[in-house]
Amino acid sequence: MKKRHLLMLLMTNLMLAGCWDQHHLVNKTFVNGLSYDLTDDGKVKATVRAVNIKGKGGGQFDVQDELLFAEKKMQVGLATEINSMVAGEVDFSQAHVILIGDEMAKTGINQLLEPYYRGKDANITKKVAITKGKAETVLSTEIEKSPIAFFILQAIEGGEYATYLPDESITTIWTKLLTPGKDLMLPYMEQVTPEKIRIAGVALLHGDQFSGKTLSIEQSSLLLLLMDQLKKTNQMSLVLDESEKESISFSKNKSKKKVGHRGESKNREYHGFY
Image (tube, rainbow, N blue to C red; front, side, top):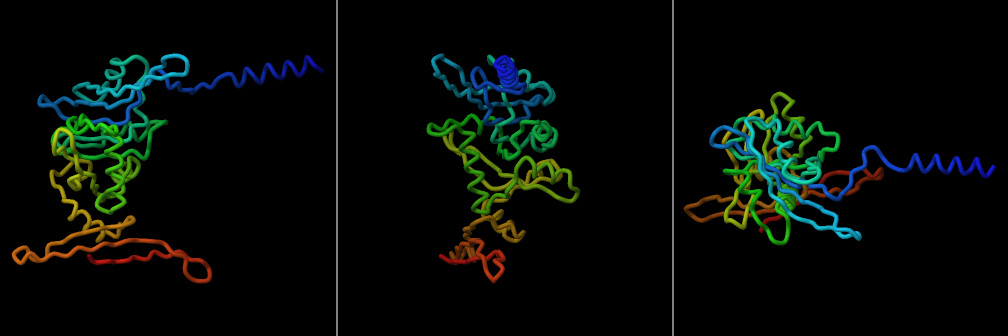
């Protein structure tokens, strides 16, 4: 009986000894943001903002922020070239944001984004934004307290909450690009100083190509309200008569409250002027 129990224990240990898809954190470079630009000679340039985690022994880790670059005539092979620049493996799957320079976006974004739709480990909630000028410039901006990719992610999510940016992710973008008659609006970002970036409004796309047209934050807020896409809250200031310096500011909030005997949930909108 004891031999039988010992045999079963050994078989269980063998079964639990490892996992075929196990990923180790050490000696791995995690991409948290990446960008694509069109170079002057027509190549595709990828810029990667990554965190490199290296084991130091004794349960200690060394975390380094890295900026990596690669250029190719086409997008194919860019990941392989970037992977060759670091020790270990580069993990692109969990990138939080993808930035696309305006000139690159005018040629189409679907081919750039397609690998991120289909990856088995892809972060399907990642955000995509168009940048004024080179996306590399925005991704290279240094922010002391927070890695730039996380700052951009938080800025975009804040804009969605305040209803001046549409709520789009890699999955909704893919769906709309495959649906005839539906055009996209994506966050439009720019670098205002070497240390500061901002959301300037939204970029308008025709199909998968950036049209070159943009809307300001005020214009996109009004458009999203007219499209009945109020997220949580919205604050807007409108100029009524510029010559007379007349303007109006108002806020709009949406909340859900249970009403009725059956507990039906209804959306109620609250308006306020200030």
